[in-house]
Image (tube, rainbow, N blue to C red):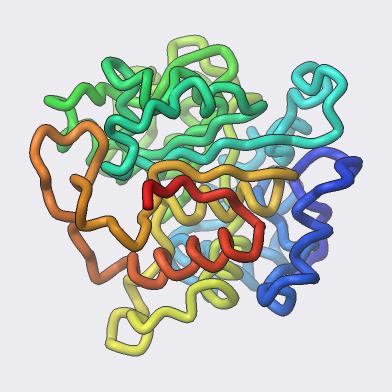
Length: 323
């Protein structure tokens, strides 16, 4: 594995998370050198052969070298491998990067946490993040939107009636792809170069405009396969991997987002993530009925719930809870 610096700002915060891990039970899990994001300089034949052995979001098994190289070559700016590429403009004298990571859990309905969420330097959201009508509870800003092509398109179909029409669009929003297979790489290339998606199930005749017609390559980022595999191996020793689901299992999109923040931010507050009293709340904050949280074979929400509780107990995150 190559050694990389963290994809965050310089370590100047006296209360930075990187200084806290060693005094918690996660000391043996945390690696400060793991690459969070991938970009142009990651692709070469040696790396390709190494990551070709891993499938899905854990590697490049679904990718031919030409497509991989063509995609990552457009992510060749400093902004593509830094999570907080505008920190110097945003910091306003602060030494510490404060991040709000917002899930879509029903616990946020009626929370009144919107203003508090928006007060952070950076606000992370994922998938069907409906804002209109829920600003008082969930805020208005999105600086980092995490998704895969599959999850945001599924969100567009599943949550359209609830108000989700696509990824958030704002000047400050960065789009962080969690690549599952080649369709994510093909979409990144198309968006960055303002050209149609050239093949596959998402093939288009015109350039995609999901992220705004003026979206630039600087606004695009992709999680590194090494990072997602590291999360699975060190933070999610999931029972799902022991029940015949190892081939399809991966950490949920929201959990990758939260742990990416933990590896790049100095202080992290988590909202809308599963808590021990999750049965009291609907699946999503925008659900009109008390819909039950659905569990899927490809994720392990029980393991994630336990992880959030322990991270909160150890002072690594501040988890919003009602009880």
